[in-house]
Figure 1 (cartoon, rainbow, N blue to C red):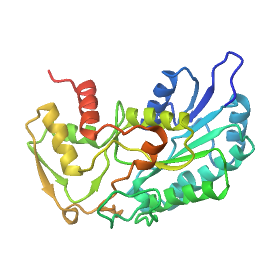
Figure 2: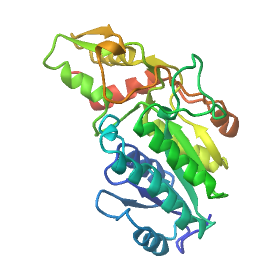
Figure 3: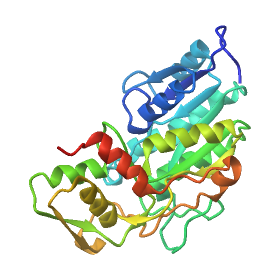
Figure 4: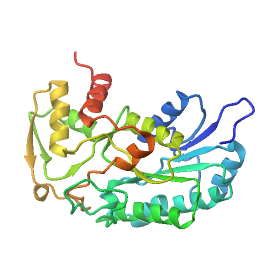
Length: 294
């Protein structure tokens, strides 16, 4: 990786100013001594390559994180063009620009929604994707577009069920609802891998430093249903709100979710020697830092 004149390595984080994951990446990178450059909403025109090309020419990063994505899962069913613009065409454009800069490593984030949920054991990186939603299909299309470019310096990280500081997420929403309710209904037949974004950011850097290239899965360890995640969050905050588990059919959504999308982390562990900590431990850190009990 190329160094700056001051000896610091330059990192560019797309979405680093205002995104849930992007902000966590910026904090993790700054703690390791990188010279950090970030973008936010409106800073770059992703409809063409010129803005990206100019930005890379000016910053000359050795490491580029793409934490920009269209993540409104249900809205994507009606807004397919916007979903594909950010999730497929933007990464492809980014990859083409990066191909002219082989010294720069591109880290791109994808999702557990590339799988159909028919398995009942964790999905490995070798399992064939079969997305059920426009969101999942557009994210898979982004993966495929990057892989087809044959980039040597490419790392694709699939992750899932993100929660973390300052930004809207499932845990924050649940706790907010329980401020005015005595009980809530939460789906209990969808299982996934809850992921604390500061852990994801730190482990992403560990993967980069270990020479990780290709596709990896990074989440916290363990699995949970949405109802289990909600119940644990409420237990930790000691809120008197009861979680009523309900099946997916009683909570219909426009986009179909995979019933089981737990991700196998073994390739990450083999590359780094690290086993991500269990999600309940990470959740406790999040709860006690963001929602301290009075």
